[in-house]
Amino acid sequence: MTASAQRYSSRRSRALPSSVALMVAPLAAFISADAAAFLPSSHCLLGASGQRQTGVIMRRRDFPPVLQALVPTQESPTGQDDVNVGVEQLVRRGMSRFAEGRVQDSLKDFNTAMERRPSLSPFLWQRGISLYYVGDYAEAAAQFRRDVSVNPSDTEEAIWAFLSESRLYGTDKARESLLTINGERRPLLQLVYESLRDGGDSPRLDQLKRIADTQRGGASFYASLYLGLLYEAMGDVGESRRWIVRAAESPYASSGDYMGAVAKVHRMARGWW
Image (cartoon, rainbow, N blue to C red; front, side):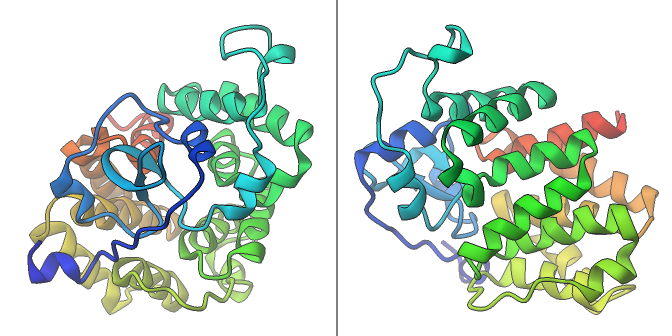
């Protein structure tokens, strides 16, 4: 990894129980070791043993509470009637459906999983993203705020809460209630957070553009994606489209990272072809 790449990644490993395998591999794609070097630390690459590998993707840094809630069951496999589908399979299927562009169906799976296992509620960030894309911004914001309440260093969920609330109240009011994040160790996401906190033409936007233009893989993808999301919140459709399309068309968008699917769904939802 180059020195510049190291500035935007924090590759921490955390051993987790094998039951975490039920929550990984939402897409059938594999991710390269090079791309892994650019991943923000919340997008851990884990195998069934809980050890970091190239091949399987999970988008959460802190999973012990959700693992306690997701004790493996002997319920019927995905594909049968929902009444016979286990909670783990519902979440996994919801993630796959989202990646296929079936956002409403993904939300149905996440809602059913949460109804059956209410203890999942603070951890279903996937549900928040689906809610955002079906236009239920109030519930999306509530979902992301619950996530931050149990993981106060989760910058991405604070960002998504802001994006959701900006659709409801405008950026100025959303900024007034911006969640405070402590302990963020990923410089790229810190730049995104500071950009939306500062508002307007923050010089940090130029820093994100430089990352998008000069880095590769995950660093360029994340900078492009969040530039697109920030510009949309600011009402600049042209710039938003430019960066979202760039993120969605990047090779990294097909790497297996769930956020790659987010870029593609965003493009589809806006009709930016």
